[in-house]
Length: 339
Image 1 (spheres, rainbow, N blue to C red):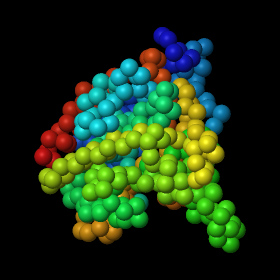
Image 2 (image 1 turned 135 degrees about the vertical axis):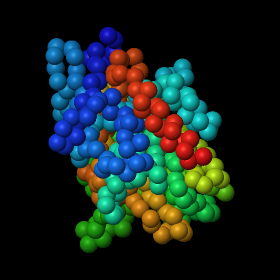
Image 3 (image 1 turned 135 degrees about the horizontal axis):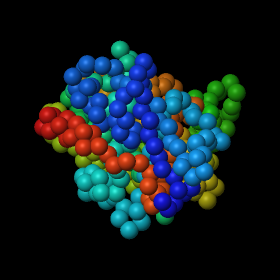
Image 4 (image 1 turned 90 degrees about the horizontal axis):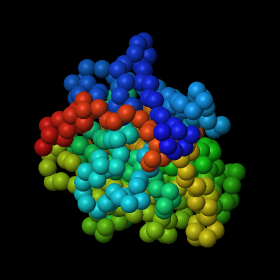
């Protein structure tokens, strides 16, 4: 078994009060449960074990929140996903499947549940040692989709979008929301989004502006080669949308430019912090119908302590079982039922 420490990722999925049948932590099986509203999303625990020397994985860096360790698959240099093909078929070829699905999200309002008949998602995660970027493919099916975005940075948040937050060195801590009483304007400008970054992305824009960064580096950090992004959405109701992106993580992002900044090193076995949030609007732009994040964590916009953990798995390692047929079939039925 070749690769990093001859690692096999063995996923143990459990829920409070009893065991649940495991299938590599890709959680498609409870999409059907969410649609039927028959249960709360499960509290998942993911345990990665190293088989060499009977060593159980224990990272020197600790989790931000929760017990979940989300798999981020290395993408082959010879066949990286095409970010502009409006399809996840190539992701299905080069990864075992989506790393995150609907049941991994919790609502920060109401009863805490994200119901898949109102908003369903399937998110593929990848990384490249060649270009040092993290890759995302985010499928979204929304019963009511609001996107009247006119192409200005300050307005994107008011429409159905995705918030992507990255802490490339897993350091945690405050990255926004600094006190004006404690810091000068110039210090806040330098500190904001420096050690972790937040991006807002949308599937369609009349100006082709699909992503922006909330810090002062926005002028350059969302440009190629640091970020690549494409989007696609249908005009149907319910709506299907897809955002594919490659984003450079930064240990120290300096608004003065890439030569003054420090990109995060990516390598197999590394644990990073990240967070994905889903604002949902049903009535009109800016009028929240719901707001969802991984593991029901708040203040994700300002502190990386509210992020979850992802592990970079290597391409050549036997890392985990193949995605179960049950999982694939569940998401397929979700998509089919909303068309």
